[in-house]
Length: 334
Image (cartoon, rainbow, N blue to C red; front, side, top):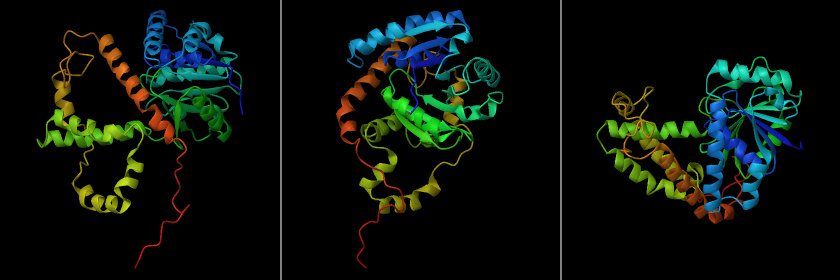
């Protein structure tokens, strides 16, 4: 198993600074590279603020807080990536920008250095054409906020080696994260595909006038969301019954939305510039509240849920999922 000593994160923005903070907190020599001085200056403010609120909530230890200061440094020079064991690209979702990062990294890193992206959608395997040794290319999609949310989607490229997938999975687990592996690139990965499907149906019901936006959110928050921390939509069927799931699916699927376009709700929200927190109004009115305060409140909520469900999740950690055909169910009476 590969030993990782030095981690480089390229991009100090929305995702990058939190990813760099996380690796440093676990004692990895971490460099956050960004060619924009403003981005680095902002990260130097955000990271200590993140650390403080996480420490206050008992989400990290004092040692991890100290490690962040001890092991994290910033740079604007790609040469600082030359002895990295893993480089994670976390720049805007623009093909030319990302391709430029991969090309710059390929010039300075070792042939065995794993080059990864935390993209949430882009097919970097098609964009990183100038990267030698494509068996080291992989996607590690940290979820926002990256310094708190445990999930990391690992997406395997067409030439990614099995050894590198195993090494990355082990590393993700060492930094207290939960890996979910997608065996090939598909648009949206796992999380965004599930989110899009749920949002499409929720918006469809609102578009039809069957239910208000508030009541859709209430129905979700007071049912699925309560079980979501420890039970996904597939395991849920073990408790409902797969026979029931099959029957309900037969009756219901023909009536679900099959739209291939954005909903009327989404179009109207954009038309009215009700984009959410970024404009101060979305489905709710955020006037008089700063984005930083709203984000801090949301982060606090995520941490409280994680802490509250920690024991439940841990108690299910040993449960095994069996593949189809791996075990037989009880014989049915005829």
